[in-house]
Amino acid sequence: MKKISEFDKHAYNIIRESVSSFLKEQADKLDSPNVMLLDIAPQDHLGAAEHFIKAKIETADLNKDANATYTIDITNNNSEIIPNESFDIVVCTEVLEHTLNPFSAISEIYRILKKDGILLLTTPFNFRIHGPLPDCWRFTEHGINALLKEFTTISITSVEDDMRFLMPYHYTTIAIK
Image (cartoon, rainbow, N blue to C red; front, side, top):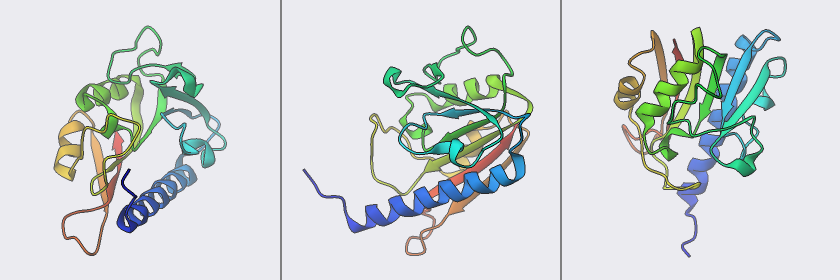
């Protein structure tokens, strides 16, 4: 079994700190008792619940043992379980790379977001293959824009690696339906 490199540990810490900072910053602006939020696959980390204190949070996960509100495959249409336009905010952090069809996942997220709903998305770029498997994709900002083509406003921020030009650790993205 190969040991995790110091770079991988360093990158992991940067990514986790960035995700947490991103969610805190967004919660400071968006958290309210009137907000319905869906957090996709938050079981390994605190996810949105750490920062969104007032919002009504529900969770979705593929793994039935995750004790999520909804056990679903986000790449499928789950309209019999989650109605159209159910959520004000969807949080999807470090998940898309694990889907077999990220375009279908984004389509499903778009379906369940209310009009003017907000997607808070993070995706790794310069990070090793990791679990839960499968780990299928890495997205550039161009790929993220292609995935989110149906959204009206997209703001993508890269978390740069100063030692590797054009190889950011990951991206944080805000997209409005």
